[in-house]
Image (cartoon, rainbow, N blue to C red; front, side, top):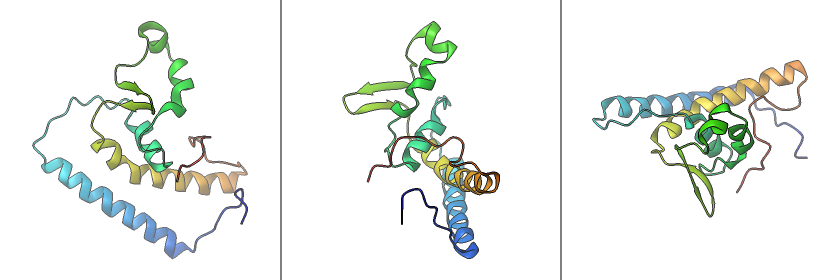
Amino acid sequence: MRATERRHLPADVAWGEFAVAALIFSVALLIYLASPVVTTSDAMFAMHVAASFYNGLHGEVSAWLPAIHATAAYRQYGFPYQLVTTPTGIYSKYPIGTPLMVVPMWRSTMHLAAISSATSGRTSPPGTTTSPRRR
């Protein structure tokens, strides 16, 4: 199978994946709601980190660096305080609990976007990164 071909799964497999993702999200949400830990609630890059985990980049968000540089906040204040640079890449300095809870939702969103793009004739879902998946 070529890399550009899409693998079509039977409907029961797709719903099974969605059910597992929804179950994981629900359990994580219940744990989060029951937890006494309070965070700073600054989740500006939570979706970026979640997408990074989904794409196999292990939380590294340098794929979104051009978008960060294009913002007015970057031009006014410089590099976002929520991010930290390391020799291996750019990461969020906040705990990864929220982004990990968002990964099932991100997966569902990308699955629905892929279905939508297949019916509309687009070649790739909106919001996907151009960087290759790391193994």
